[in-house]
Image (cartoon, rainbow, N blue to C red):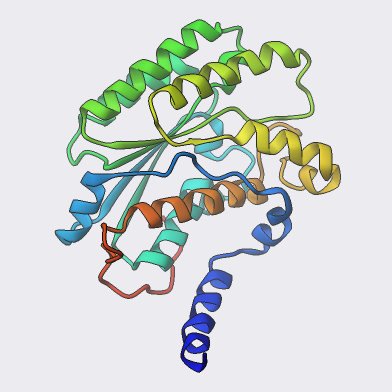
Length: 264
C-alpha cells in the first residue's frame, strides 16, 4: 500500500500540473472523449524509433483559436503542452492548420495537400462542419467531404480524430443544424474513426449548467474561449497518450515526462 501511495502522488501532481485555471472552471461539463479508442500504428512506430509523434490539427475557427486570449491558449497549443508534460519534451509536435471562417471544401483541399507533405503527420485531428451549416451548405455534400477527407488521411497512413460541430445558444433551426451534425457523426462512425462529440457535450452542458457553460464561450457567445479550448485539450490528450502505448503494456514513450514549456 505504501508503495502504491508513492506512485499515486506523482501521478496526481502531473495531472494537476497540466490543468490550467481555465480547466478548473471548465471541468464540470467537459465529459466528451473520442470514441472508439484511437489506434495509430505509424505514430507508435515513430515513437519507438525515437522520432516525434507528428500531429496535424486542421479546421476552422475552433482550430485557429478565435476567441482565445492568445495563441498559447488555442486548443492545439494547450494540447501540445499537455502531451509534452505527459510524454516528454520533444516527443510530440502539433501543427496548427486552422483557418477561421473556412468551410469543408476549402479545408478538404488543404488537408489532402498536408497529409501528402513531408514529413507527413501520424495523426490528423479534423474539426469540421460548423461553417458549412452557417454559410448555407448541404448535409449530403458535407457527408461526401468527410468521406473524402478520411479516405485521404487513411491513404497517407495516418490516424484521425474528428471533432464535430459546436453547440451555441444562437442556433435558430436546431433540426437543420443537427442534420449537419449527423452528417459528420454518421460518416465518421461508419468508418470506425474516433469521434469527439462536441455538439452533444456542449448542448447537454448548456441544459444542465447554463452558467458554467457560458464560461466556456467568448464574448460573441459563439466561439469558444480559453476555458472552452482547455476542455478540448483535456478531452483529446488522454486518448492520444493511451494510443501511444504498444501492446503488452509497454509505453512507447521511454523518456520520462518533463515539465511542459509554452508551445510556440
